[in-house]
Length: 408
Image (cartoon, rainbow, N blue to C red; front, side, top):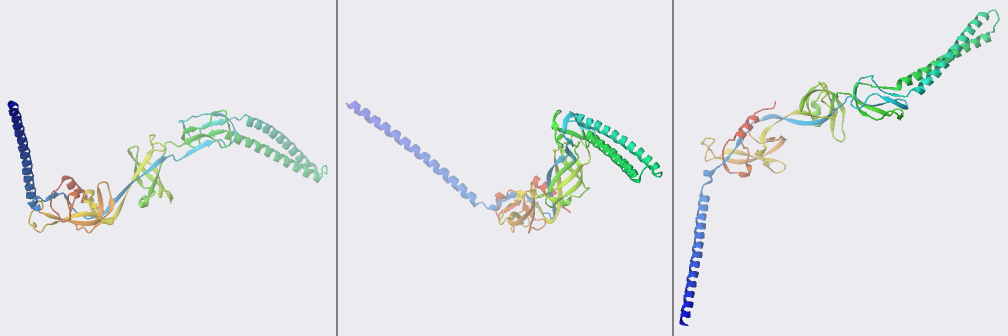
């Protein structure tokens, strides 16, 4: 019994020592965190006490150069068109006997394309030829009779009335001959119109009917398109159409190639829906590669005389009332004698108006002095009144060279 009491006492002492060890460990860890927090706080305070002027933010800048104006470039898209395109057919109704060409064939002007059945017309012509022969025989007899009456009228063998009747009979037979000849001529015209000929040199782009069909007058048989196409129609919007003149030589992009064209005509109307004026362009060089329906792109440039400045897009931030803000640099008062690369500058915001925008730059107007230093980018890092120093960047050096170009 006594031994059990001693054993229990020993276990309680061991458990108490373990609890003390755990408590001391937790206390040590907490003390470590407290020391680390104190050191971090001290470093933060030391950092806040460091003067801003010793860590002045470097920025890229451009030097403003005034420009006399800017160029507006716009690209207009049109299509290649055939100068002549026609759905051809017969003027007469009849049975289609033969079609001589098929789709894709090239035909020459005057070439026979198709033919109607002419058996009925030929029979009518033979009938009219017989009628003409009869009329000519009657005319010959009437002429002989008239000549005889003229010879015997003086001797009293024929009365004046008989002579007049012979004369009018002869005239009637003349009219009969003329009528028969006219009817034959009509049949000849119809026989000629039974042949369909190409009105111009072209390609057959569609065959509408086949042999054996009875056609109505004017029903299309073939569709022809002049080939190669030599005309482009492009709609030009705005005032840029005023820069185009009839006879002017231009260049269009066609099938990824630059193709020379000449302005053929400017239509005198502006489209009510598109607001564009159609300009007709003639291809200078014919090419079988060009097809009707191909897209053509025409780039036009217009110079706008307006004094201003080119700025990179990154130099602008959104301002009030539809304007934009740029940041000008002015030397700080405490560092006027330092070299430009080491001097401190103060950021001054200025408002500008954007007149024209391109892919990576804008043309602006505003109260900007010539040769002013303008922050070229990274505007999210600066605020008005902040001190900065200049650090040129290769990209902005190139931008400055381009910016020095003056539009006359």
